[in-house]
Length: 467
Image 1 (cartoon, one colour):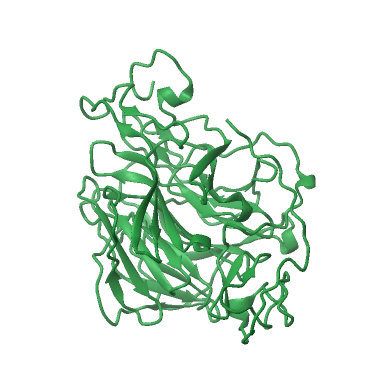
Image 2: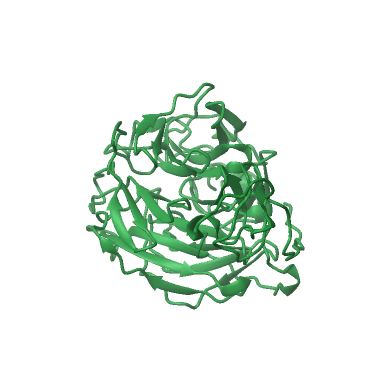
C-alpha cells in the first residue's frame, strides 16, 4: 500500500497567463479566475478571462471560447498548506449511497450522509447517516464535523458550486426501522466551505422559489458554471422499497434567484431512469448520462447507453460511440476529465454474472469512442447460488479497488480523482483511493477496515469470497 506524501502547494497570485484577446466575463462565469491583465488570481471576478485554450490554474478552470468554465479540473492545485497537518486516527465507517465534493481552495474532500447499513445474510439493511466528514489528502487525515447538517439520508444528489465554494445536496430518502415506506425528500441544502481556505464551514437549507422537483432518491446532479445553476436528472419517485418509479425530467435551480424550473426538452427523449451516472461536458455545454435502470432496476436488464442533453438547445440525443462499451450497469460513478476532453466511468453493479465491478472506462468526447482504461476483476468461478460465492470467484486486479457501487468519485486537482466508500459483495467499505487520470492507475491513500473480499483482506485459507 502506498500513502500519498503531503504535497506542498504554493499560494502564488500569478500562476499562469491566460493570454490572448480577453472578452468580458460575468461574475457567474469568471469567479476567481483572471484579472484585467490576463493573470490568474484568486478571488477575482467581473474582469476578463483568456482566449480559448488558456488555463486558469489557480481556480482549477479552463478558458473555453473566452469564458472561464469553473470545473474543478484535475490538474490544478489547492491552497492548503500541508505544514498545518494535525495527526488523527479518526475515520468514517464504511458507507455507500452518499455524496461528496472536493474544494480546491481548502484542499479537502467533504462527504455527507450515506448508507452505513451492514447486510445480514446478503440482505441489505439500509442505514441513514447525517454525518459530515472532511478528508485532507495532503495530510491523509479525516475529521468529523460538529456542525448540524441536513437530516439523515442516503441516495441524494450532490454537486460542487465552484463560484461559492459549497456542496449542494438535494433529495434522498430515510425511514425509521428496517421496513415500511421511505420518507423521500425534495429539499436543498448547501455546505459552505471555510473562507480563504480556513477549516470553518456551515450548513444551510436553501429557501427556494418556483416549482420544486418531486421528492427523489437516486437522481444525479451537476453544477453548471455557465448558467450558475444546479441541475438534476432522473431518479426514483417511489417511496416503496419494493418498487421503482423512474423519473425522466431535468430540473435546474438557478442560484441568482434560488428558483427551480424544469428544463423541458425541445426535441428528443431519453428513457426515464435511476441509478445512472451523469457529468457535465463544459466544452460542449451539455449533460452526459450513462447507464442506470428503469422500473426493473432490481434485477435488470440495466442500461449501458449514453445520452447527451444540450443545455442551450435543450435537445436530448443518443451519443453514438465506437469501441467496445461496458456491460450494462446501475450505480456507476462518472467524472468529467476536461483536461483530456473525456469523461471517466468507474464500477457499478452489472446485470451479468459478475455483479459488482471495478473496471475503469473513458468516453473520448472528441472522437466519440469508448476506451477501456483498466479491466479490473474478471469472473473465474461462478457462484453456486444466492449469496454463495467461492473464494476464487474472480481473478482479482489487486492494483484496482475492490469491486463496488454507490461511491464518491470526484476530481481533486493535483490529487487526480479521489474515491471514497461504496458497497461491495462483502459489505460497505471506507477506503480512500486516488486515480491518476492521465495514467489510469490507482493508489491507496486510506485502507478499508470492512467490506473487502477474503483475498483482498490478506487472509489465508479462504473458503468463501467474503470470509
